[in-house]
View: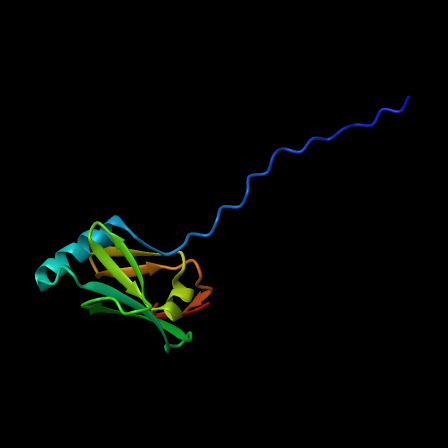
Length: 127
């Protein structure tokens, strides 16, 4: 009688789905609340865009916007809104907006998992 060894494989965990949208870290939400209160424009939001330029080919742009545009993706948390145009959204899927404050500088930072390379100064990137 031939006996063959049976091998059993451990169940594999399915790959984690890629995050969708733009995440807003607690630090970013709190800072945006303060800035919106100072501006006295609680209905406004932060517009984030990706534009051509910089030494690596693409760069971020952030500015205030009084309201969203027709085709914008709108991300909201605790009354704070971020507006992203459809073209920029393709580069920003899964990105988290954070606010960092150190002894040397403070500001918003985008933790973008799509970035493949960035320039030395940190102002531009490529995907």
